[in-house]
Length: 147
Image 1 (cartoon, rainbow, N blue to C red):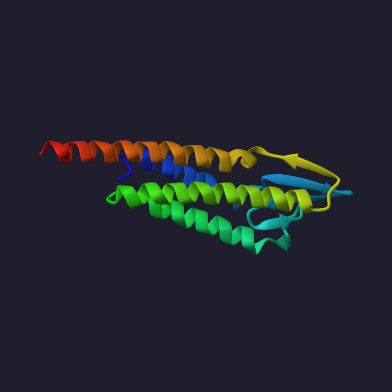
Image 2: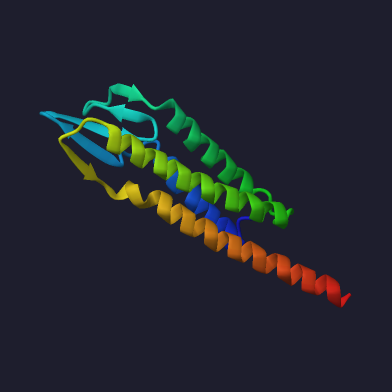
């Protein structure tokens, strides 16, 4: 049910998280060499993979799959709310792992780009979706009490 507002929030969050696989979020300068970092790992300027971060890639795939699953679970609102909370925790954890990897890498300078804030925006969108789902569930419970 894409016409519900929580589905729109979750769909935008899904698009933001998928874009993290393709758009470099951080550039690291080490000497004269510039490295790009996204959820797939480090790559050189011409796109060659330098260091694959498989754990981070699997983390991102899990977040995206769970996000897609949440969108299509509109009939089970209680489970949808629970999975929304779990996905928010996973996104925060993934952002923490990204930050740790960038901080621990050898570098001279770090340049952050716009996609760095995508996980924070996704968490906010998940929270808004959670509130909308909860409001729907409370409305259904109130209606069933009136019968």
